[in-house]
Length: 346
Ligand code: SAM
Ligand code: SF4
Ligand code: FES
Image (cartoon, rainbow, N blue to C red; front, side):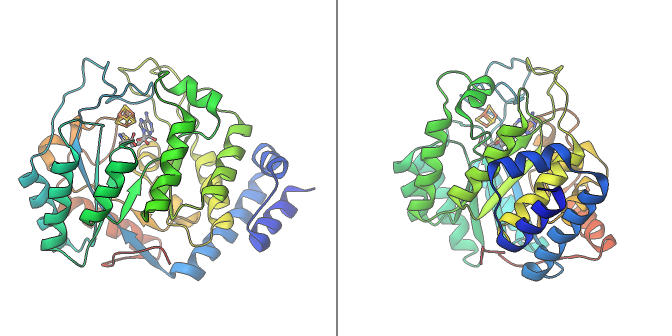
């Protein structure tokens, strides 16, 4: 089979066999990449038009009990500056975000024991009381089914938990032994079952990743059928043992965004901050390759630089209002408009 035939198959049937995905990723030429990009952009345009959904990202804590090898917030990083936002700081970020036009707030952080179910449910309820027309997305790691149920009952709508890599052996090379791919995937299926709009995802070019791993990631998304999928390039952090590993490639990340769009026409697909970090126009390129979401930073400016997952992260010195203005201009420059909308999965 030729790559062009696999692209056509993805475009018409929204699926491909593992061998076909591997063949495409290994052999795609520049011309075929452009063919794939156009098909993915067309698909996104059919579903979302020229609308780009925005999510206000509030980084609530840089404290984490985990030790994921790739992440600058890992607990063994002694150089990390740890902070946690108070409930008041989180709520005032939402107040500002609402005025700026956000209708989704993403509360993300390390696995920080301070944010117990009681504390988190209180914050979720208060945001919903103030802004019943807004969606709340949580991204707080593996809290387990009981916690997920309480958070859902308190009013949280969505949960982001990247599967990171679908292959258990690869997962074990990126995480300490207490974290497993099986448990991660079990929690993802539980989130869906509990009724969250669920987001999975993976890093592109993480250390030891193979093309086979990426094909399995795409097929895992096909099996889980999440409403969202976050992908971005792996970027090394200087205070982790992956400091000298190469960063993920722009081209491969864009190719995967397009394949994901064709396999999942309705999926909510962000052009991530990591993509914007490895190329000044990375997020614009992401949209032109089939993404439909951007996540401007709404965190209080004084803590931005301390939520340091990887080196050279963008938007660390900018106010929330500047960030959204900047992204709106970037989207306009490529013929898209950000919208004041919850942007639910349809
Ligand atoms: N602690 C929660 C979790 O792990 O799900 C939420 C925050 S965590 C920092 C969010 C995502 O950042 C992870 O799922 C991971 O894919 C990504 N990430 C961490 N370190 C990264 C790196 N060095 N390069 C690119 N992405 C990274
Ligand atoms: Fe903690 Fe998430 Fe970073 Fe892992 S990726 S160390 S869970 S913040
Ligand atoms: Fe944050 Fe440009 S998007 S400053």
